[in-house]
Image (cartoon, rainbow, N blue to C red; front, side, top):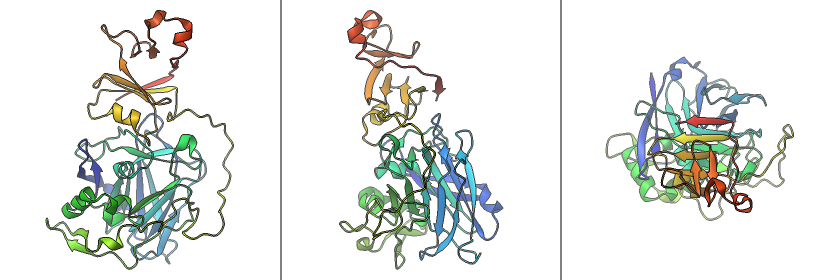
Length: 368
């Protein structure tokens, strides 16, 4: 059984190593790589399966996985996909670069992506995207034996309600949590978030797009804790130069014409702030879920959420915080029993005042 290593950001903002048992790594054919996609379990965080592309450490294409337009990853299950090595002569190769691109308009919020073959395995966690500015939400999908719940990050083709990424890419071995590498990321966040070949999210990158690679390969110092590759030897090769990369490309850097995505089925898109589904409410008792952060963060996107641990509720459509109603607070609060915002003046407030407070109509409630 293989252990796929990655890292998340804990409540104190520190990088924390995390291992995920990847038993499926033993089950893959010799000339293929398994990619597991774990969603955030937010009530409707599942969505269209992204297209997957793999390259080796020299930037040679290994293979691609192209889902059907109706293929989904459901909240109740993780997506496991086998990428055949059909673009390198069906040879054994180690996947070091991966890109996922959502060609459809049903957004998906991803908590973890594990990549594994018979030799190597590694995991990206949504906290990396959150740290580097990708659209995100609180996750509730327990990962690994230490029961961490990383944040999830969104991929969406049409950028509904300002979701900022259609695609994302990362360099697998740079997700490994060696002591010195983690310290470097913490002390110099640019070595993670402004290092495009290491990690990036993309506004328009299509499934056949080509990401940038470290050429020649990066060199690392030996880790002080004897954990393999440590910190980078030469940071000048790691951090992007000003205006080096265009994150709005469709296929590759330097493209001369704007590529066109194939059209998806038409649907009505209503602006609803940062609310993915106004009919769904999340009620959490987890003290690690920071409702103040999710309600005020410029890149958060998800569902209305109430915390019994923090005694607050967030209206995600308007990014507005309310305290929970109780015996001492009976107005300008959120009532968990009626699932409504109670205006100033209480339930007997004048109609014109009550109209200023959003009316809620929840069809489903998830308890975390």
